[in-house]
Image 1 (cartoon, rainbow, N blue to C red):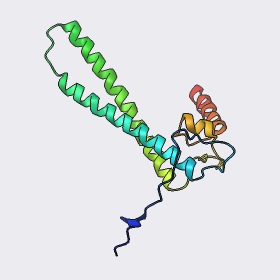
Image 2 (cartoon, rainbow, N blue to C red):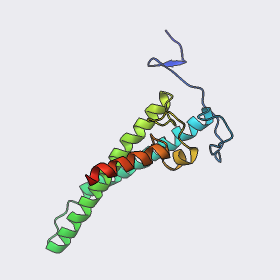
Image 3 (tube, rainbow, N blue to C red):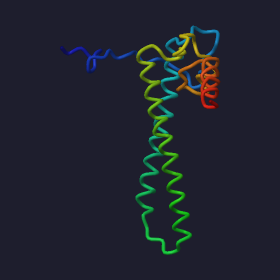
Image 4 (cartoon, helix red, strand yellow):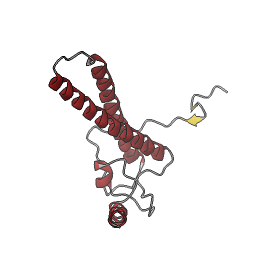
Length: 151
């Protein structure tokens, strides 16, 4: 089978034209091709930036394994390294959430609240494209967590 429209069992999608200044608007159909492509690109760019930062950190940590004779300087460097590693761990978890959002795009579920099924506002998605809940559902979730934490 020599069909160019299939790659590894998946159908290739036509490239969606997206002007550089495009921003999703409330007056167009929710999660139309342009909106989906906008968020896909936003997520992919964010993911690339995080991964590039991780590579820089790894290189920096490998280069920074020098012997520092002063105890205070060495302690300061170890503290900086620990902080950098914690930051990178948070970013690793963020990459995982970005991958989840990209998967939801592929499955046609992106932009809809996982609790209510209602559309998540475009403003919220633009600010936090990995959001899985509408603002109202997220607030309810956080209030419940706070109540259970206070018990």
